[in-house]
Image 1: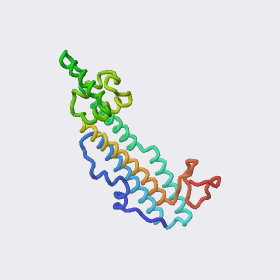
Image 2: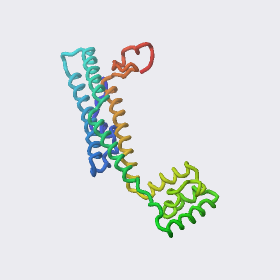
Image 3: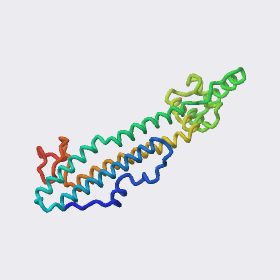
Image 4: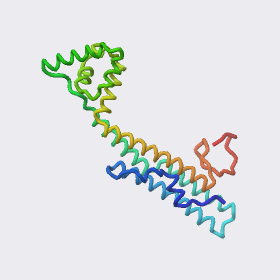
Length: 230
């Protein structure tokens, strides 16, 4: 008889890090709702299996067939789980918003004095042994970053690859909050995805089923179609 699943195990295996997630934006709410929905699904699977196993009118073979049906339905629902799709869409929108907030870079030099200073700065950068490294070490100086990014790279001794690195690093340096928000949001989505995979394993363990390569859910006691693994 498969082992029953308790609430402690569900919380420990399905996105345990979600307990630390904030509730400060819609994507966090969607992520939390998705985790809750997955946990509820596992709870329902366990309860349905328990009810079948306690049905005295069913033979052992009948109980096994009912469990397979429960597993098949649950795995099918999880394959296109609406709460998870909603959370993914919300995260995509949030990441786009963070990226949009990181487009601002130092403005190009204006006026005779600023243009002259930018020329001197580019000459100084070009004279360095490692121009890219020099600029990366001075990302907190908008004059250096602006002089380099708003002119052809060769004037500063830089190739396009170096300019791209400087541009990306400058955005991160100028918008650390957006960078951090992006990271924790991506980490949360990864945690949700791992939770979904854990839920799939829990369903198969509880219902004694497997998901074969042909996409069909079968009893672990059935032969593998074509002699290949799941």
